[in-house]
Amino acid sequence: MRLLSPLEARVLGVLVEKQATVPDTYPMSLSALVAGCNQKTARAPVIEATQAEVLTAVDGLKGLSLVFEGSGSRVVKFEHNLGRVLRVPAQSVALLAVLMLRGPQTAAELRLNSERLHRFADISSVEGFLDELAARTPPMVARLPRAAGEREARWAQQLCGEVAPPAAGEGGEPASGGDRVGAGEIASLRAEQTRLADEVSALKALVQRLARELGVTVPAEGGDAV
Image (cartoon, rainbow, N blue to C red; front, side, top):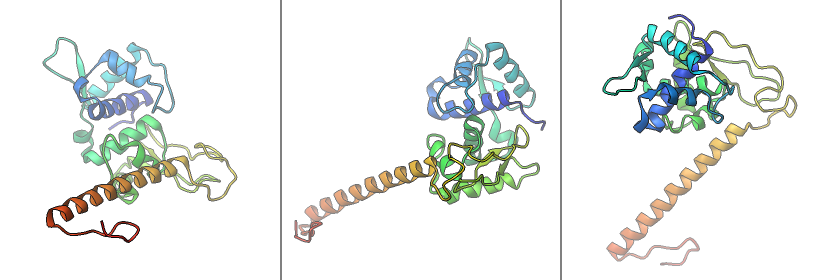
């Protein structure tokens, strides 16, 4: 398969994203696709593509069988075919989409940003799928050299060609600071903390309910029976 243009990659990423996040409006019309490509949030870089430019990108993707027109609607709508054409699982499709939409990211950032497309159990599972994509011929992703001042290396999609390593200080972190933790890692840890707290609360409620049904007293957190 030939290399994709940046706009073709953006179109693919939008189709994958919207299929998962707004399934009621998927497949997507051309106007919705343009809006998704030009979205100001969760996009890097932010672009201002015209309808004609997006349609040209769609035509190019149709020629690669990566996009096809949906049926059953008076308005022409488009669907992606990324997983089948590349022969990759849904987890890999989610990671590629997030990389196409947001640019190079650490594994922790990818886990956080792909939450609505696929929920990965932990960062190591993200890295496992990234390693599989990197081992393909040609590789679909690449791990970039760690920039000065960054604690973790970033990953980039290769469907548009090789990505230049980040210069010192790029990626939202200053060049100095040694082992600073990236914002994506902090957000990922906070999300994990929230999830674990919810699980603990649910387990406590279950124990209390079972105790009431069995007529058993359960020690409170301070040590007294309840």
